Image (cartoon, rainbow, N blue to C red; front, side, top):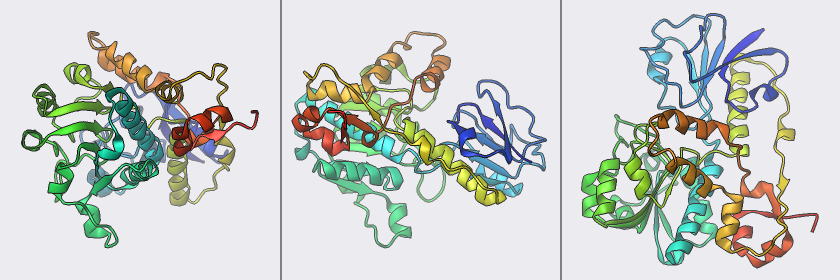
Length: 373
């Protein structure tokens, strides 16, 4: 029987597998257990795997997977040299992150009294998530440009915006992997030079900490060349920069991609690749993708209040800010990511028809009318 050792927080993993596969779990806050009896290892971004902490790779491990879109926490070339295949869940949370971005933009525009149709959003990175963000912006008729030179090189149907044009945008939102080397490094892509040479109304980072130089960003906010920032990922996670958090319009603990459906997608993608690699059958998971009706007894809402009722951005923001003075904030940061229930993505939510008719923004987000009203 095949055996998987998996992070205990990989969502409902056992429900995607049948009895032909045995799953054991481990706590990512503790040391990694021995791997000698396992065929595959599944982790999340909180567990780094490299030549230092897995210098002696057991021959039994043939597959390593991460239940996340990014895999910069895994030294892929090292494991490839050991004959181990590395897989990820790239794109699993694209819709969830795009909802984080559009919801943040809508909340920001309401609070700052800004007409988004008069803004141009620059999307840095046009992969699965950047493309999902572009789709959201299109639904709301918000002008945007997409910047992704590596994709332009490999995809002849895609044309990237120029660096000059992307830096002329009013808003920047980041959706790139963290790459410190190679032809297109992204580490500190938004640095002091770019920030001191340009001005922005809003900068959003929901990709990876380190893509933006946080100290340079903080200086730009203080110099008023950047009006607002929304930060979900941090350079030294989980020990986030409290000064940046305090300066942010919204600051959250790396949860942009956290939704019920995104977590299911990640587990499903890992299991499907595991199934292909080891040639085993997996369970039908369609029943796991359930919708839910939210019954709002009081229909007297503003658009701002409704958005926050459906997407708990401000709750996460308040929770993070409450950690600012705590000496154990890195530990508590991780608990914020694992202990809260996952939200539902908009197309999996149904609401009173009266609210949908009153607030067209909800229809654009994909919220469905309740069959009970």
